[in-house]
Image (cartoon, rainbow, N blue to C red; front, side, top):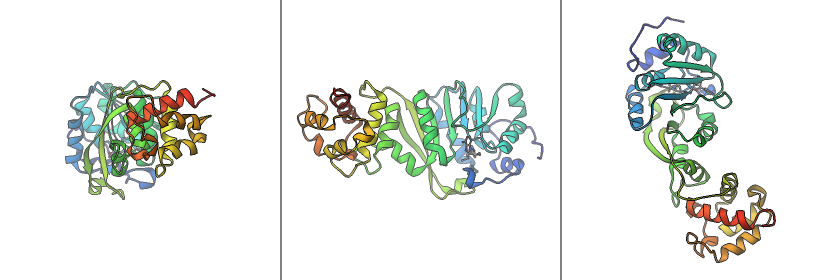
Length: 294
Ligand SMILES: C[S@@+](CC[C@H](N)C(=O)[O-])C[C@H]1O[C@@H](n2cnc3c(N)ncnc32)[C@H](O)[C@@H]1O
């Protein structure tokens, strides 16, 4: 491996980093590296209100984003599964590793123990982006994550829009979710097949309360498996997913809901039109009347 010249963090050229790493990205290993410095330079600017004491990066690759994060953060931990890139990162950023500014963890981001980070900023491996996002979202830290554009838009979608679905309700249960930039395929090497987008998530309490979070998320998942059906049929047909023992009792109660949030037409709606607040209100009714003989 070619030794790296010492360079100031935040100034490394993406193509030079990839050349020094000496390995091309392999799409079969989720390796699409950022090569457009304008995009890489903009990423930390979306994090200006985040606590950057300890930034977690998932999938460092040849270190293009790692370099920018080192310039913006007090400390960075990068998790990289590919041993060649993990070793390259340690070599390229040797002085930062030596002085404690950078820790390189070689391992699978889905299973390694995560450090106590203050924010996560990453160009994620797309094959596991959903699993990673839902490993990180419940930890309640702000994040800037690059996803496939379609996935990003579904995460951030509002009820009534075409993209709204289970992913939107579940992600927005944990955080305010915004798409801050769409990134073209040309910004990466090798180019992915689809466009990408950067999502900013800011943790916050949801606008509703649920007693049993796991049941609420299962209820949402269940009803969205029948998104073309009415809520009435969605609840009735998916008890095996939601875990309801008595879905009919829930439907009966929702005929004339005793709740300010729900109106009498809720059973005739389709899931794509139901807001997270309404889902939570239905889940409260379902939790009370439809489970364990309630
Ligand atoms: C899309 S590339 C991003 C690389 C670099 N951050 C950039 O922006 O150019 C994703 C990186 O994640 C690594 N990776 C893939 N699966 C991983 C996993 N399960 N855990 C940790 N890293 C993984 C790949 O080896 C690759 O380096």
